[in-house]
Image 1 (cartoon, one colour):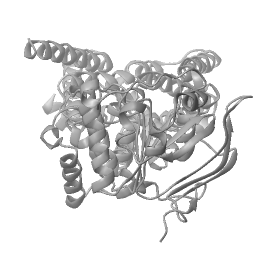
Image 2 (tube, one colour):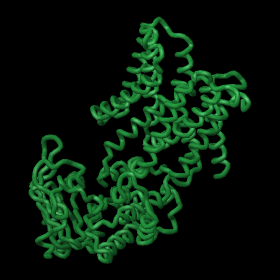
Image 3 (cartoon, rainbow over the protein chains, first blue to last red):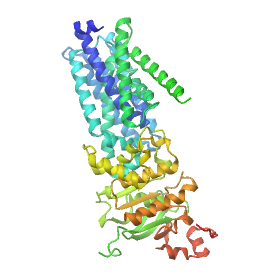
Image 4 (cartoon, rainbow over the protein chains, first blue to last red):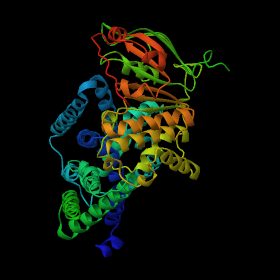
Length: 277
Length: 254
C-alpha cells in the first residue's frame, strides 16, 4: 500500500482523510460518550444520508448541478438535523431520548423517498453507505481538512467548558458559563464530523468510530486528558489499519475499520480484566 | 460597613409555584457577610427551590433577590458564588476524571472563555486541595474515592475560584455518618478561617446547630430565622409548628 500511496492520488486522499477522521471522530466521541449521547451520532448519520441522497437526486435531475459535491448537502442536512434534535429535546424535556428515533426515522424516510424518486442510484450511494477508498477526491480531502481544523480548534478552545458540562451539568449551569451556546456549538461539531467521516467509513458505520475507541480507552484511562489521547490513538490504529487491510484484501474500508476497533475494544476489556485479577 | 445594612444575600417577599400550589410563600431573609446559615425544614418545604432561585437556576416569579447588593437578574459575578450539590444527583461516578481535573473545573468561569489555565491557576488547585486535606489524591480518578472524600473534592472545586459565598445543598447525602461530623468541622473552618459566608441546606439539624451561626426554618413560609442559640432554645411545640408534625427532641452529647 505504501508504494500505492506514493503512486496514486486517490490513495493519498483516502489515507490523509483517514488520518484526519481517525483523530477528530474519537475526539468528539469522548464528549459524546461521557455525556451519554452516543445515539445522537447514529441519528445524525441517517439525516446526512438524506442529504447525500438529495444531492445525488439533484445531480441526476439537473445537469448544471452535476459537479455538486454531495458532502456539502450531507453536511447541511446533518447540521440541520442537529438543530432539530435540540429543538425536540426542548419540547420533550422529560423524554429527551425521543428526539433520536424521531430524527433517525425522519432522516431514513427522506432518504428512501429521494432514492425512489431517482429510481435508485448508482454505486455512488453504495460507497456513501459503506465507505470507499477510491471515492475520496482531492476536493473532499480539502473540505474534510477544513472541518478537521475547525473541530480540533473549537474543542481545544472550549475544552474546559465542555469538560465541566460533561462532568456535572448542574454545576456548569450554576457557574454561569454560557452552557446553551456551548452545547449548541458542540452538537454542530458532532454533525460536521459525521458528515466528514462518511466517505471513508460509510454512513451506517460512522457512529462506531466515535464510540468504540472511546469505549476501549475508558477501560484504562487515568484522567480525562489521557482518555482523549488513548481514544485518538485507538481511532488512528483502527482507521490506518482498516484502510491498509481493505486495500490489500479488497474489502469495504468502513467494515474493516470498525472490526479493528471492535478487536481493540475486546483486547482492552480482556487486558483490564487480566490487570485487575 | 454595617453587615446588617449590607447583607451578602437579601431575599424580599419571595413566592414560587411549579403548578398551582405555592412551594414558597412570602419568604424574606437577610444573610449577613460571614454568616454560617443552616436552612432546615422537612421534605417538600421549598428548601431546594429557594436554593435554585438563589443560584439563578430558576426565574423569579414574585419578590426580589439581591446578591452582593445587586439584583440577581443582572448579577454576572457568579465566580464569587461557590456551589456544592448533593453528590448523588449530579455526578457520574464512572467519569474518568482525576481529582485535579475536577477541582480545576471549578475555575472555568473565572479563567474565562477561550483561555487556558495558567501556572498560577494550577497552584490555586493545589492550595484548594490542601485546605480540604485531599492533595495526596490529586491523580486518582474521582470514582475511586469514598463518598466523604468525593464531597471534600467538590468543596475544593468550589473553593478554587475563591468564592465569598458558598451554597451547599445537603452535602452529606452519601457521606457515611462517621465522616459527617468531620465534614461539618471542615465547613466551620472555612467559615471562621477563610471568612467564607456559607448557606447550608440540610436535614442534619442536630449535628449542625453547634457549628452554624444562624438557622432558618422553612416550611413553605419562613417560620424561624435567628442565631443558632435562639434556635437551640426552641421547645418541642415551636419546632412541631415548623415541621408540621410532632417533633420529639432527643439530646445527645456531640
